[in-house]
Image (tube, rainbow, N blue to C red; front, top):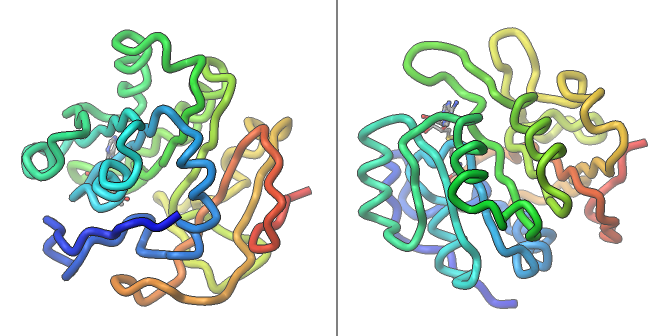
Length: 216
Ligand SMILES: C[S@@+](CC[C@H](N)C(=O)[O-])C[C@H]1O[C@@H](n2cnc3c(N)ncnc32)[C@H](O)[C@@H]1O
């Protein structure tokens, strides 16, 4: 599938859009899953680089994101009118979707969990609540967590939240019954980021892709 990455961005740090960090291998691994999904739910919109990519390339997908920062929320709402950006935090977004789109729970949904930074000067990390909610309410999901520590390839950078690495240790008990895939590639394909940025895919599905390793 051909896709477009917008040259436009509202992010003051970039010269062009950089969905999924601009990592084209990441995008190509996930294209089929994105095509098959009916909902895209993102926590942490920031300047909408990933969200813009979703609405530009997957017009049939319902795209919902949340961003508590007033400025970013308002800028991106104007920038990407096709998406629904809610000015609330995660995990509240999950209750919001449950109430407004109850049918979403039975549809294939792709989650981009990216709200694990500082907000408002506090370190608040809803990752465990997010995963628990998804697993208890959705049957058919792909969970992508950004900035995730990769035990197989140390070239991937990851976030620390306070003194806790964004990695499997923190959520291990919640995902022991589903497939956890890590990227294995080394190529750097982003025009916007200098580093490879870690991510993880959690799903009930099986991925046969030699750019991924199934964690056992
Ligand atoms: C790394 S950026 C998101 C980048 C974006 N997902 C993308 O791929 O283009 C993180 C954003 O999460 C927001 N954030 C932090 N804590 C949050 C929370 N609990 N709920 C929702 N957003 C949060 C921050 O304000 C920031 O704009």
